[in-house]
Image (cartoon, rainbow over all chains, first blue to last red; front, side, top):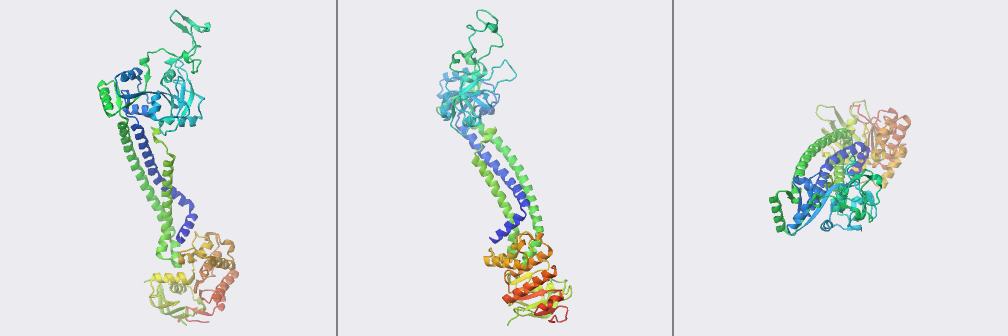
Length: 389
Length: 225
């Protein structure tokens, strides 16, 4: 108690240098501890997401891009599949649920995920407020997106333009928010969900406009014949879907050629999964991957990177500790006069040594405690490092 | 009655090859107020250090408060110094990061390992008042003048109410008024508590206030007044 009091007086008298030293040491300890916490969170979340998705099917290309697209909605630019593949697979009679995903678009910078109701069912997604999107032009917001944008059921949001500088590209589409999903601490919290056909509306493949045969402004008509009418650029496609315009939306393209980013496959059992994988490998046209295997590979890469970072942190830490040791040695050299005074007054050698060591131990303890608190806070905040993928 | 301090044929110094002082005989009775004089370099401070147990005698006997400092180990000498002797060092030996009040209470903290009790704090405040240190109790020594530092060191020696007070030129840096006040405090405190006082001084004007004066310049080192 007495030594602690004297130590506190010493540290108070030298608070500036003590604080700087504690901060330097604290950072040295906090960086590897924080990295370990984030790495663990990264690993757990990556594995959890992968384990909840047995198979992903996409066009041939990078398996990493496919998994990042299908599980994390990262819009990597992977070549899309044709919607016809979905019908082919369903027709093959595999005992599996196949859920299509289109993640090529965004709304207010959040990924816009076109899918079917099976997706919500499989991911355990429920509407915390409002309802799930059922018809064209509706959307549901992930919990984090709703909070960030301050939107709820009844509000609207625009999709991000597909190309700002190309006027031939379809305009942004106004989506009606029908619900907000419960938080799941997965990438689903960061996405906007809509029906798969709504994605095709954003593409302009499915679109709506006024009838060109009735009550049209004659000034818009440039020419035409019995089967085709040519209109000028003032004639615009509809930029929103509502009950009055819903019926006017139609498709000009071949339904089997419509784009899909990936297919999530939930086989009924391991046997069905193996059979399906084998058949797809033989076919060679598609790529089917087990997300657990791909994420394991990804984790190996990250762990190798982490080992390098740890080595750097260790070298920096050793340097900092050496410098701290030098600072403490210099501080003790400066205390020679004090040591002599204490000995002259009658302090024992043990007391003197203890009084010399305690400030160093206090600084070390404070820096370790600070690093531990920072790492705990990081853990408590529940940061999702998979967002940085 | 056994004297508080007794030296017999003592050879005192800081090790081989250094200055050595020989004291054939010196005796300070319990409750006596003694002055120690002599020319510079004659070994007055060395004698005080030997009495305080900072150094052990090379030969002869140095008996202090019943303990033979020649045969006692370092730990026993330190304990005696800390618990029963009040010291005013020539270089004052204040701890710069502690306030004046903390410096005054430091020997008590070192001796007991605990925070000093209210009675000791009160005694520290009373002594500070008598030495004009009250406004400076929360200041650190680096802010004090030479005289204020000396008075702080003097008060520190008296706060634990020791049986023996050893003071090495305790008024050397003080103006005449403060020197008078400080010396009077030393003498009064000794008289009030019956403690023994051994003071090194160069001021001939102060000698009359002591019961006995030992002159180390004399061949025998014996008392001259």
